[in-house]
Amino acid sequence: MKVKNIIMTIAAMCMASACGNKDAQSEIKLSGAGATFPEPFYTMVFNNFNNETNNTVSYGGIGSGGGVRNLKDKIVDFAASDAFLSDEEMKEMDEVIHIPTCMGAVVLAFNLPNISEINLSGDVIADIFAGNITKWNDNRISDLNPQLDLPDNDIIPVYRSDGSGTTFIFTHYLSQVSESWKKYYGESKSVDFPKGQAAKGNPGVANTVKETPFSIGYVGSEYAFAQKLSMASLMNACGNIIKPTLASITASANGDIPMDTRTMITNSPDKDAYPISCLTWIIIYKEQNYNNRTEEQAKATIGLMQYILSDKIQQSSTKINYAPLPKKAIEYSLNNLKKATYNGKQISL
Image (spheres, rainbow, N blue to C red):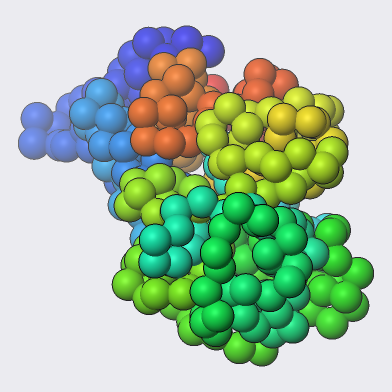
């Protein structure tokens, strides 16, 4: 659906809801909570959505885990998560629909005085965060960076203190490239890191790295780009050293995705792919009538999802350092939105 048609439909729906009462407000209020990784993108989208439809969207960046809990408790209109729900998690909730919204990456931001570029591999990163590599001039790091005079300083890993989709993506990647990490830590939104410094949210990790010499932390790419942090280039599945860029992030999605869009694109086999790239999702209930929500709210929620998937919004994502979705992801998502119902009836705008 074209963005113009989406906007006109939502606006007409809002006007209709105000008919018969000149004091009625056409504004519809929606709320969501979850991932901090896409929060700058959502801030832009929700502001534009408000300007063009008069509907307001309040969003709390409380981490993917918190957002999913709020949706499970049915106190928000949507949750945002960098990790799709597992089959087991979905069994604990009413039926949901996953809507990917944009692409990004988890980058390794670092703070080394007088060093702005460094190369790392997945197994080395795993051993840094497992506490097995403790010095910046460790032989395994030096072998990847023969051109650098690395300092004999302790490495200070920085990790998330809150339940985080970013942590899930990061540990999912580490579990693919390190059998030791997979065995002892695995992949999860929350991990008991053995050493280092904890920080809340992507902003917290980015700020901590920025302010702490000899630190390294995993953080959403947009935050690292925005704060101009030094970011490690990583060895990908093809053995190529790749910088995190919008082009290398996009290359990670050059493959098939399932119709429900629940897929990970870490450690992509594409030769040009940055290896810790990711989709991020908004999750909504298929049946939109819950917790006294109105049909107008349900329609506005579906309209918001369609708005995010529109060409206009997808192309604008690059302005704030996110990558647009693959065409298949948009096609599947628009079809999946047709399954949304209110009182069992398909929602039509």
